[in-house]
Length: 310
Image (cartoon, rainbow, N blue to C red; front, side, top):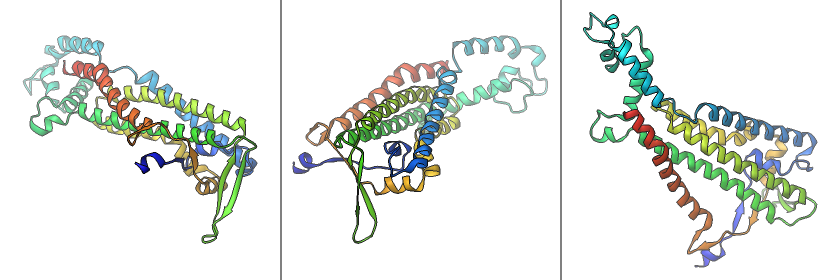
């Protein structure tokens, strides 16, 4: 009971470009360090925008749809059963050789690849345990992992803004203190100017909008991937897009910036509402992620698998 009511929330600064953005223009980063941090933030935004644009225009609709089925039927009725494409050696029609995924085919490679990917995804002919672990199950797991990564990004964005807003308003001020045992200097954010609090709000707004867009395009990206190998790689690629700020920090952040976030004391945040040990954020995420997964399964994944199976 005491732990439930007395536990405080803190935001610990990490190795992220977004954490450095709050200190642009302060003496802690210096003029050139502030300019470099601005450039890192711009690069971060541009890379996320480029990915969202590419995914939006290329991956938000399935490659295999009703038109694909119509084209396949047209191919089957024409070339697939054409006597000109009949193999006198194998004594089989082109359709039969494609369905067998005959690697000696000199044509219809697109159809062979399509059949092979669909068979690996659906595993319709497999039985037992192997038949359970289909591409559909892999997609569900990848979707849940993706939603957890987006939830982590949103949680960090909200925590940073809550921490900044909880700091007293005034001229931005960093206090220093030296650890008498380690001789290491630590910093504490004593006050934050109003314009920085406003900038923190805009930063939060951007991160929430970016997270929502990435959530949508990432979902479509995963659901409409038929190749099982590409599905795994796409899930990893999506995680990298969300970690661009960390990658930029690790590769290009200045030494003063690294030192600052490493030695900054955590920011105290006002606690979220709690009921019997559960806080509002954890309850919301615990309901939202499963609900979204079920919604995507029923509205996108299941119809797409039905198209493949047909």
